[in-house]
Length: 101
Image (cartoon, rainbow, N blue to C red; front, side, top):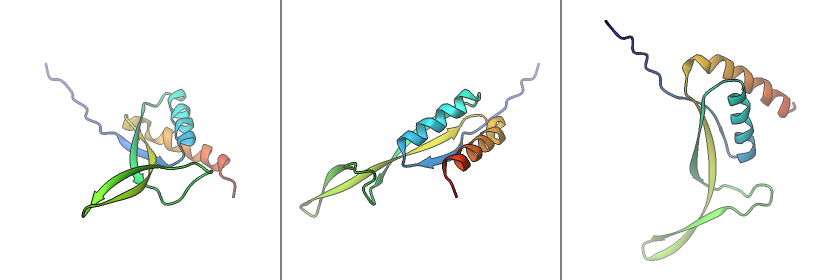
């Protein structure tokens, strides 16, 4: 008896630096039955947002200590390719409502 093996890879569907938006969209997709993972990635901060103090890290470079401001981005990854069309439609609808203009 032969087994059919279906291989899927996760697909990155959205990246944001707004933690609240990332959590909201993840919950929206999960409530619609989509399997979603969130991955946080570190990036150098370019500006302060909403008055928050960004995290910082001290590194040593040629004997000098340098403070680097850091920011965190959230990536939403869809696990099942079969959910891709539904997830894209949900994200487009939600972002169209949330971002006027």
